[in-house]
Amino acid sequence: MTSIGKMGPRFFEDIVVGERTRTGSITLTRDSIVEFASHYDPQSMHLDEQAAKASFFGKLVASGWQTLCLTMRLMVEAKPFGATPLIGIQIDEVRFQRPVLPGDDLSAELEILEKRLSKTRPDRGFLKGRTVTSNQQGAEVSSQLWTMLIPTKQAP
Image (tube, rainbow, N blue to C red; front, side, top):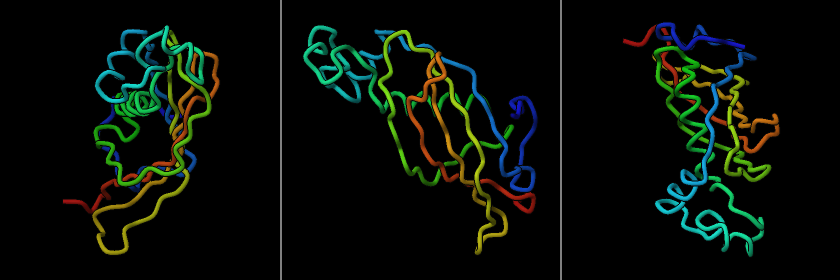
């Protein structure tokens, strides 16, 4: 498990397959769920408790898109690559395992699964990592497979 948020930039050569970064946490409130949904996913199960009772979930739940956005925020704040920004180029295998409810406390973990140098640009490499978001009970609520761009030490 890494704790690297306060260090300088990290480069392709500094990253090790198997490395894990765990984030802090963030708590979803009813109001934050409704506000997000009103802008980006205005469905009844995200907007109104009474209407949500008639939904598939039977209660108010956060949008999966909100969960993904919060995962990104948590990971950016955790700075797995130090001062080097997280540059995503692809997200695969997006999964929503269980609903996120008002009061849930979310955290995430990124595990680096693969790394490869660019075949055409020696100033960059690619990292593949699984990001798992969990609630306060440690139950997985979502997961994604991220492909990220990272500079090499040869970068200008």
